[in-house]
Length: 100
Image 1 (cartoon, rainbow, N blue to C red):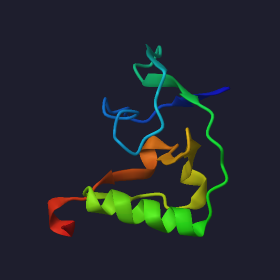
Image 2 (tube, rainbow, N blue to C red):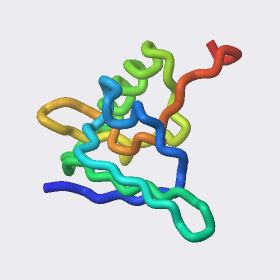
Image 3 (cartoon, rainbow, N blue to C red):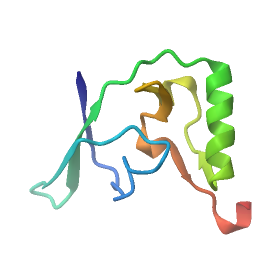
Image 4 (cartoon, helix red, strand yellow):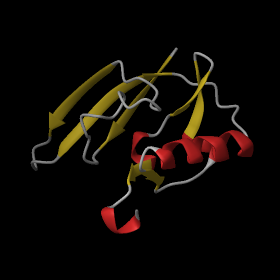
């Protein structure tokens, strides 16, 4: 099964293709009458059974790649095809140079 998500946030091209992301199967962007861009995207449904240990290991893995959580928690990750993945592409960001 799949999940459809809608956002008015900036949608970066790398979302869904980073090694820790759940894939994004489809994406479309709509420009509203007031000029705002709304993105609609489809992801496979993840199994949301990760625990605190999974979250800590996942966090350590993304930090090794230079990312940090901006919205940390077990609800941001799930399992897809047996792998722990990020289900909310907005929940992490690249660590700024000053944070490295």
